[in-house]
Image 1 (cartoon, helix red, strand yellow):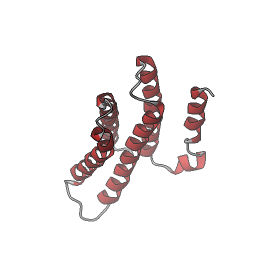
Image 2 (cartoon, helix red, strand yellow):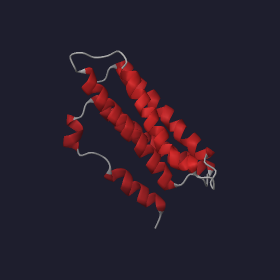
Image 3 (cartoon, one colour):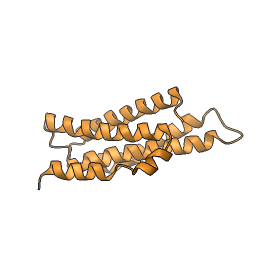
Image 4 (tube, one colour):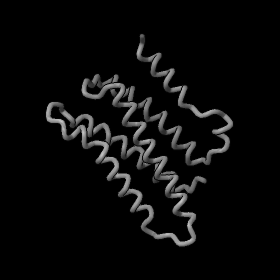
Length: 144
């Protein structure tokens, strides 16, 4: 079975239905669009560079994890921002939580001595910072 067919089936199965898509705010729509763009870029770069260390499953896991923590970040940030008494350190504390969860996610890869984990770590942090740029763009533009 061709891996491109499997990727396309998985890619289109994750798209939300039109009813759900209309109810979502713009920031979540942008985040979902960036998720699909980043997965497409990730597959293209890995195929172009022919990396053996980063497999298709790793690409899906890393991008899904980063999408998940950013989605949770916006959800928590919106809930904490709407409270009557908010702290100016809400963004910093949530960013620190996001970094801590990312390190916990990477620990099993780093702790293995039998594999070369450097390409995986560089791959992870490249997309971590890509999602961070999207997050900053969304927060600066004030999409609601």
